[in-house]
Image (cartoon, rainbow, N blue to C red; front, side, top):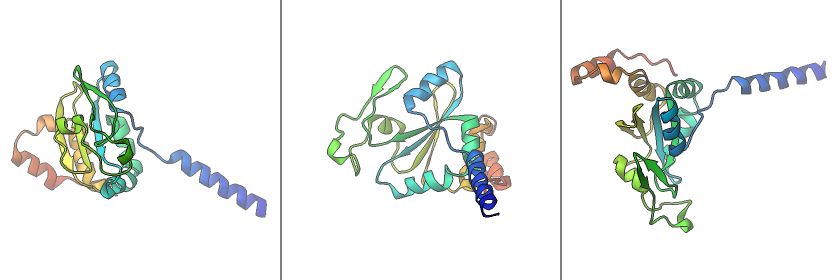
Length: 181
């Protein structure tokens, strides 16, 4: 009896792990290369290693199974350290962080050129890029799963191409019913 209860508990834990959905993060360069083969929008989580809200967004929002599944289905998801030292190749141009200080790798550092190009001024920022590599929109700040769902569905299902006025967008927001709780 004791053995069967342990076995059942172990099977439940393993099954739960199989059902858990995680975001399949890529590097920017991997996402841009994948886009050349199979066009798909890119979602970039622009973060820093010292940012508390960035860690909460990663854990609470991107850790949500529904959010993760939607992102994986509709985007090439990217995590990008806004103060990191990686080289990024975007539209035939190389972006780097020439003032990166390895001694400050775990705290505030200099801003990466690609972060500057994207116009990132706050962390976290989620950036949406279209199938052709064009910038769609940046969303600043921490968002809960229901809050980010509004943007994921808007950009992920191409509603942003149909809704062209502020009035139409306001109506979309007013009628939106989140399914991620």
